[in-house]
Length: 452
Image 1 (cartoon, helix red, strand yellow):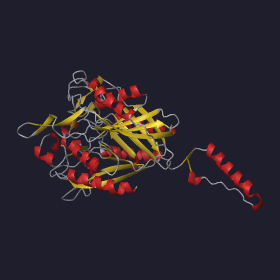
Image 2 (cartoon, one colour):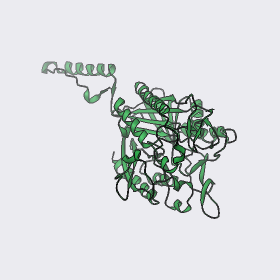
Image 3 (spheres, helix red, strand yellow):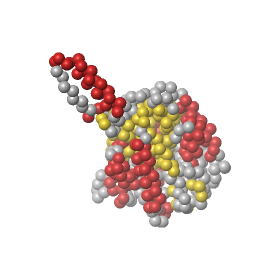
Image 4 (tube, rainbow, N blue to C red):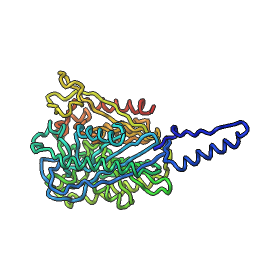
């Protein structure tokens, strides 16, 4: 791909031929512009690819206790969006699985950079967090909390399939990049609810807490073809656990995000990437049912799918000139006392031999046109943290992408540690980590990212 800075046209100028030479010069430039594939900074192109990753045989499912699938309720996919601003390509992947280890992300990120030159900062792999999809790669941090679930061998065959499909999708997307425009907006849905229920003893348990904090905003990106504004892809960011189907379900499914993505695609005519948000303490309003019918899974087409379509329709302004900048911040915080850290994730410790071990939590950032500030982390974050970041952010549109580039456990607010319950048992952090993390992210948004 040719850049403008590389376009050099040498035309001789003589004093008695000055006017003629100028005309010839611009004609040659015009011919080259029309005959070459040239990208300029801000000349926005995009592509979207959908790859089916549904296994054909029984697989161990991730999300509850160890169990094997007995069939398929609905297919699961990679949804891959490629963005090119004329300077670099950004790859956003949404995959219908529960979790991947940061070590698995690192391995795939190296392959993406080797094959396509897309840097680590520009490759974001987010998972929808459905609890009814197969395991991918090694267990990573969950083995430290729930080792009894991982006594079986790692399924390298399915992991290789998922990796191959991801790489193939990116390759196809790069070949299909075409001029595009970008729109942004908000939606709102009551499809979720706080799940940290409490009785009079003030001990939290997994249930429904209608009085608890929640995030019901939908952050929407809309990519359209530049020439005629036909829809190319929708990106919908919403916080909700993929737990409409409970541990009794043995059918592979994308759960709530899969049903909603398929519905929006059917209604809009273009793929939708579902990107989960800060869903650490947020459940669907129907949760952990033994099957899709009793869990009213299809009702989420109306509860969430229609709300995404409504928010998308309200977007009327599109920008043809798009520039973005991706970067990373490492947040350091102590490891919770007594936690046995997996050796496969030693790259995420500052000093694995020190008495007080520090976890490196990578946070990614994307500045689009100094108007959209997106940040992401490999966490199950409590929504209060991302809500406050959004409220105090200098960007008019601030989105948080959770479950992105791996999983390093739950990060709670300091107040919620006092109520105990499930989430503190699967957190590697100390109680004040959430407060400090939110402040660090906000500082980065207000200074480093804004300056980019």
